[in-house]
Image 1: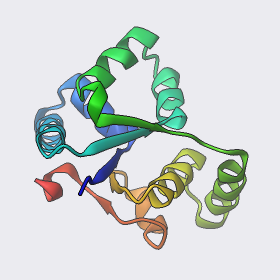
Image 2 (image 1 turned 120 degrees about the vertical axis):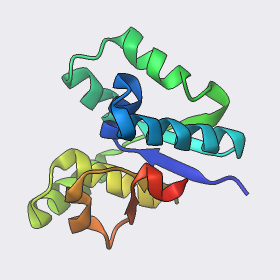
Image 3 (image 1 turned 180 degrees about the vertical axis):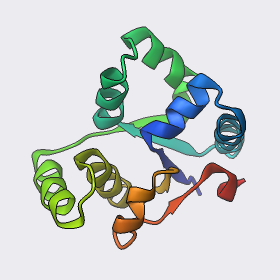
Image 4 (image 1 turned 30 degrees about the vertical axis):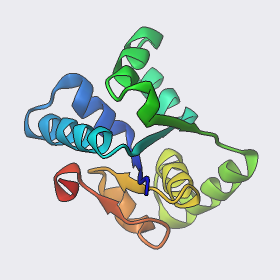
Length: 135
């Protein structure tokens, strides 16, 4: 059975910047996902957040190529997702992007991978795990 993983933007940055232990754990998890023939999901929100952090289109493509195209799948954000996320973000005092990540993760029956503590406020939507917890 194929498992699905949704990496928060910070995990992609850990991999790209090779951030010490965090980067190594994220890279090992990615390798495990690929070897297990599972999928890493990403969304337009991930791409938007990377662009806001001054990642170029080429850098984003290079980052996603690390995971190999057969192991990546884009999930789309709808108007309903955004409306629901706005409400959730306001109620829980979390960033809109985090609310969207949580909703997309739940809808796609995926495991959210992140180090962001804001997701603790969304644990009824999705359970978050750090890369090293999944190795």
